[in-house]
Length: 213
Ligand SMILES: [Zn+2]
Image 1 (cartoon, rainbow, N blue to C red):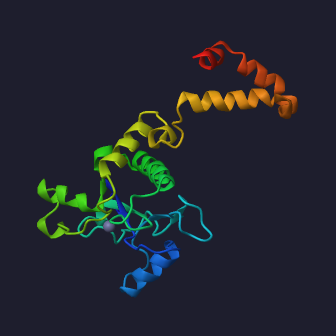
Image 2: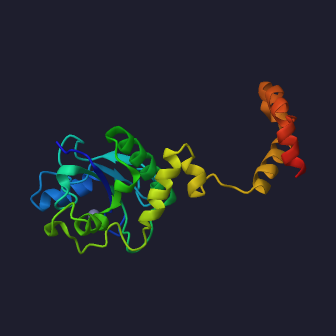
Image 3: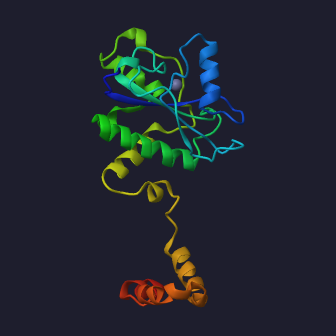
């Protein structure tokens, strides 16, 4: 049972379709491991049946993973499907990853700075937390993945912000919001019984100020 002090995130490093926990489990069994080495897997936008950002369970959290050599007894590992040297995680993967990291970090009391991309295990070697045998030459989670961005999003979420806005998924410009409100206002008869609530909302002072801005 790991004494969880760190959370690591990875790339599957496979630039192919339909990678998921089952398939990774097979790959890892083929290496002679006792099944999938990661505790969670996050699907990308190239799966035929699972949606982009879907989170799958891998190895149980109460079992040591096989994901960061030298740190498996002190960490949990999350793998994002795709190849981080080819493309960054998808937006949906980032949202799921950050949500999951926040959940696990809160559960195990892990400070945000202890959330690391696999290659950053080297910082633990450099600071003598782990010995030299834990050093990796891997680029995981990949050159296209900005580990500081992930930690930044985690920090935003932990301080009460929304991931959607932080990742740009929900961060539309006011113009877009105003346009959407105009369209609804022009079609308010479609709202039926909700029309009265809509009008209360729409004629609220702040909304009217936004419309006029
Ligand atoms: Zn890795």
